[in-house]
Length: 97
Image 1 (tube, rainbow, N blue to C red):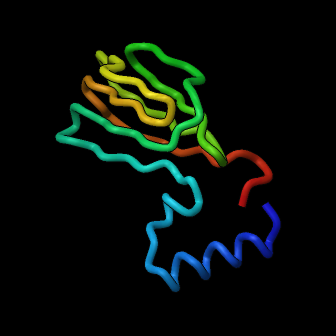
Image 2 (cartoon, rainbow, N blue to C red):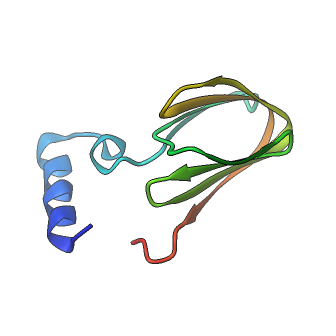
């Protein structure tokens, strides 16, 4: 994305008080009690096992770690994961800023 477009989007977010995840297509996570995770704005599953879920996002990979993980619901840009969630990590793709 060009620098000018980023500046315009940033100005739009600030001027109109819009949420960053909406304008920049960032992942949005809702973590409920360490046992359920609702993730919006993903671009597909990279890896899934009962111990880990890796999701592609616009600018990187979102990694969820735990035990007994299971995909409760999946939609084109949303996913609900249940199980014991121990941690979440976000890895920005090389070259993203």
